[in-house]
Image (cartoon, rainbow, N blue to C red; front, side, top):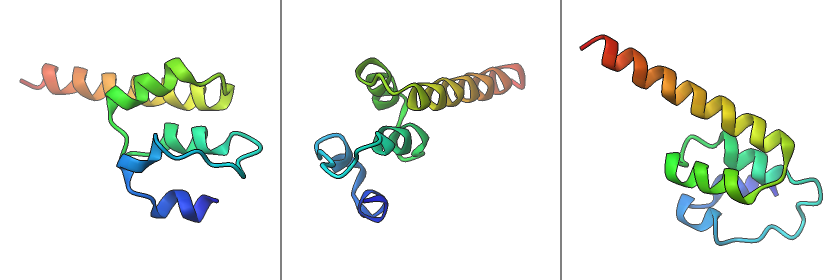
Length: 75
């Protein structure tokens, strides 16, 4: 399942249902996937109830905000 996820095009990720994902790993993988932009990350945050995925999403959003803040301070 993980290899299938990694090989999948990012456009397919939100359309495919991973039937073998019994532990909710796909949402954690999506949350950590750098191919997924902010818009889809926010969508995933609204849709998932997976606490681990939500934690990863929040950390990614914090990191994105920190980078934006550093870029605006440097200008």
